[in-house]
Every structure is written in C-alpha cells, then in structure tokens.
Length: 341
Image (cartoon, rainbow, N blue to C red):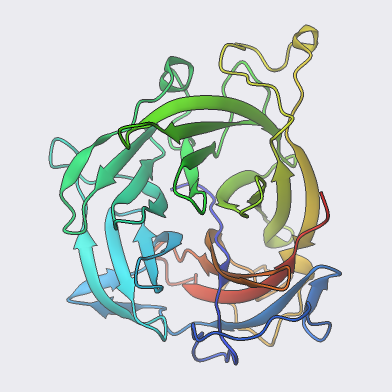
C-alpha cells in the first residue's frame, strides 16, 4: 500500500465528532469558524468506523468513497471489499470483489453508475473493472498501451470519478511514468459511447506538488476536478493539499511519450489551491502517530461530493488506517467554494 489520502464530506446539518450525518443542510457560505482557507472549512470528523467490523469483516484500509444510487455512501477498501454505509455512515454490509482469476485486487478508486454498476480501479495494472450490485465482474474498460507499460508497482490508477451525467469517466495516476518526470501525473478519460460502452478518450497531464501523490479526484460538475494530493514525512507527518484542476485547455498527451521533453510544448491542466488540510483547525482530534503536526490529518485516501448548494460543495473524506494500530479510520466533513473559472 502506498501513501494515500481521502477526505470525506457530508450533507449534515450538524456534524459531531461521533457521527457524520447525510441529512440535507443549507450551505449558504463557507464557515469562518472552522476555516482551513478562505474557500474551505470543516464540518467535523468522526472516528466511529475505526477498528470496527461488519459481518465479521474488518472495516478499514479504506481507499475511496462514492455516493450510491440510494444517496448513501459506499466505501472501498484496498483489500478488495465494498462496504455499504447507512445514513449515519455506519457499516451495514460488505461485498468482496475479485478479478477474472478469482484473486483479490489492490482496489483504489470507485465510481458508481446510475444503474448501480460499480467501477473499480486497481493501481497495480492499471485497470478499471465493472461489477454489478452483487459483485459479479462484468468486464474491463480499455486502457491505452502507454499506461499498460507503466513500470512503477503500486502507483497506477488511484483516483476515479464519473461526471454528473454519467458520460465521462476520469482516472488519475498516483505516480509517474518513468519518461515523464517525478512530479508529472497523467489523467486518463473515457467517454460513454452510443451503446453505453466506455471508450478511451483524452489523456492529459497534471503537475503535482513535489513529494506528493494523487490519492483521489472528484468531478465538480462544471468540467473541472477536485484533486487531492497527500504526502508523509518524518518531520510533520501526514499532509494533504486540495486543488481544483481545469483540464479543458490541456493538451491531449495520448501520443506524447516524454512529458519531460520541453520541445513537446505540452499544456498541463491548470490547478488552483483550495486548502492545505494541515492548516485546518485540529478540532481537538486525537492521533496515534508519534509525529503529526496537525493531529486531525491522517492518510487521507478517499473523497466524495455529497451535496452542493449556492455554489458550495459539501465533501466527505476518509483517512485510511492501513489496518495499523497506530492509525485511525477517520471521516471528515468539509465545505468548499470553488474559485471562479
């Protein structure tokens, strides 16, 4: 498992340290009392999932979140399990997933189609598989050859998001191609075809923060993406940066073999900082890490947009405990106002 990060947002009118709810709530403006930045604030956090079980299965290693067709959250673990959550974000079921050979996946990204089909990435191959509601494998999406030759193990498709109409799917690489430079990330898109199948579409480049990997992405509904980058070092512990990226003017790099070659004149997706999570108020959150500058922040891996109103997005995020006694499975609620385009 690589360094991951996930932020969790809810539709809660009141979010407490014990429970994040998903009841509809007004989001007139970004709160200043729990501000992480001028455009982002916290609603609260919950550690209620930490070190719990459902149907005898350990609830942890959570790497992604998605809103299901019933409006509630589904959480994906990197141990190839889907956990359904109730309206209080408590686990009420688990569904195992396997590949074509009956083997467990290193499952990282999750998106849910309007009919309930689950789209799941693996960061080893890379791949995107489709599963029905019962967890039966339906098939794989095509992946471009330049990404299939990815050389760094365990750093491929980490983030996944589907646009509001269900027509465009985007996956983000956690790491870099060996020819591209260590801060460069490739994003792959698919477009739904006439017969409802997904076909490969544009591939664009994004410049990550030095030392950070992309742990999750979320489509904002206006052609842009929220991008969550996170890192760990022994001086400050976990940190996470939330950006809004605009790929609409980015170069299609599907046929570009070397993004580090300046002669290619590649236009990267633009990015604008929304918040540094380590600069959020700690909310008196506990931590078990020996070094953690902001005890609220952990290995944030997953992020889902759970509501929007008056220009404010409500997010739910989740921190992965890596099934370690030193880490906490933590949900976060956050409100974000996107910068103008």
